Length: 182
Figure (cartoon, rainbow, N blue to C red):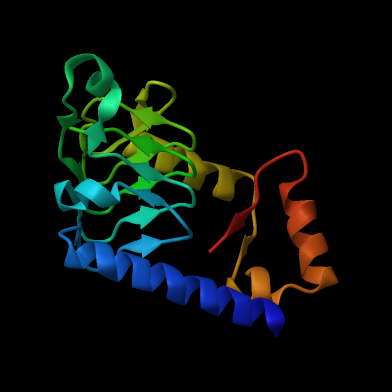
């Protein structure tokens, strides 16, 4: 019960923060799912656009400025950041100024995106580079599920619904391999 209340309070605080950024020009499409706290370049949030159906994992950073030149040249670089529809930005990724992430694209956890990423790919690393196409990756995951007779656990296995038995089932399914949950 306490966990749910704390979670609700965090979500509400985050929602108020995001509402303030939107009021200052941050563009968020419909069905943008922000999993947890992120760093938004608040001073230049009007340069950031997130399109429809984008998922943003925890600790992602969106930078619309680069102040590395300030000390030397007395000015700062600015650049738009645009994440196109149906994309996923992985945990702790950093999206740098002047970058567009294409539609139907996955950015891997911990990636530093310094250049535009095209539609329909998976990109990861520092600096981020294209690893494979989204289509190829999804086919590989589907093959793993079907060829290895994997269980896809339902929403009753999500964090607030877990008991010791369900937790043990998830651990068993992910031991030595990958498990799946919807």
